[in-house]
Length: 190
Image (cartoon, rainbow, N blue to C red; front, side, top):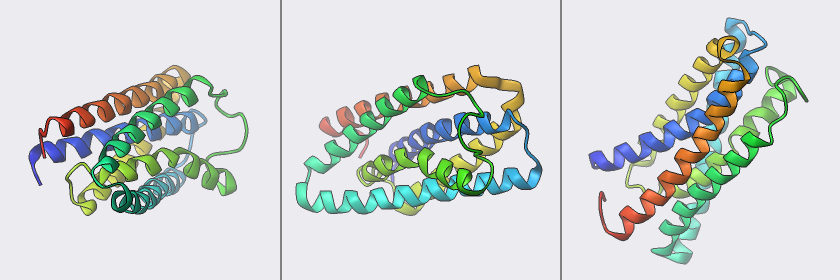
């Protein structure tokens, strides 16, 4: 594993972390206790890792079927996920609308909905050149840290920070997908 490959997965994990941070800010704006923060953090991280692994499975099948073109399809998936995240951030409802993201079915559905982007990420991380275990650990750590920070800072940051974090996450993923595709095309960074 090269340093360039490790830097790639850190960027991807950071992008996913921004998305989780945005949702956690919304939940944190209502205030949460310590035990609830741990439960939300674990739920979000578990969902992110699970969806990433499902995406990895899909990516492996696509890799066998499409060969070298699967890597470019994976990077295009990053761009698509980024576009989706920007769309979702712009169409977002007010915090507190809908179901309660802090417990029960609201927590389960919230964790699954924010981890859908990880499905596309899982598809593309096979082609970054980082061992799967390292990728999963980076994504899990980024998710836990982002959730914790979002919940802790939620009341202070407010809705403006939540929307900007979600938009920023989408932009970073689009730029990352494009950059990875260009680097692969020119055989730079393994």
